[in-house]
Every structure is written in C-alpha cells, then in structure tokens.
Length: 113
Image (cartoon, rainbow, N blue to C red; front, side, top):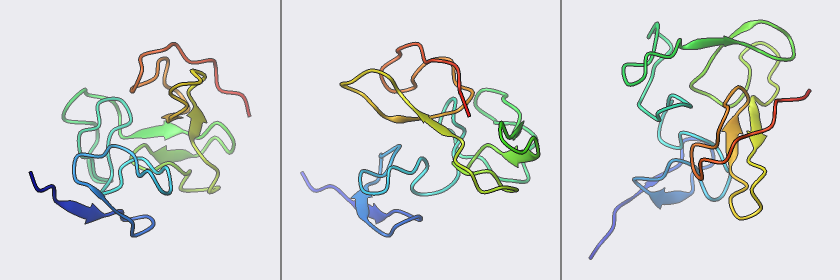
C-alpha cells in the first residue's frame, strides 16, 4: 500500500503524514502547530485548544514571558520548551509542563532549568 509523505516545516525531511514528531530533527508538529497535550492543530490566534481546552499560551520557565504552546521554543528568549521522556525505550521530547509522556504514558520528572 502506498503511503504519502509531506515535508517537515522545520527541516524539509519527507516524512509520513501521520507523524507527530519529525524523525530527523525531533520537532513536534512537523506540519504545523499542534497542542502539546492532545496534538490537535492550533494557531496563534486561538485562545485555547479546540480539542482539550488548554490555553494557547504559557509562561516560559526561563524568561517568564507569555509564549505560544504550538512551538517547541519560547517566542521571547528562544530557549527550548521541551524535556526528554525518562523511559530509555521512549526518550521522546515532551513539552516542559507535561506531567506524563504523550507517547508512552510514563510519569515525567519536574522540569529543571
């Protein structure tokens, strides 16, 4: 069965259309901005996610500025908002304020700067 691929908006790698993360650059939302909780598409104009109701902005843990949740870097300071799942078999990047891994379900440690 043929599968269709699309380019990642971050690195240009051709990847499967149902991918949540890019296997080349590890970015979340390789085809557009996604809610880090439920992976529904989200835009900067949205007040909250239409899937789970999460606010579309969060306070950056580094500079304390309000930043959009649909990307993996702070809009103000540019630092990464991602942490790595501690499960050795998983190891996928997760949004810094997530309590459990959205891939394997393992409880995540608190984010440390």
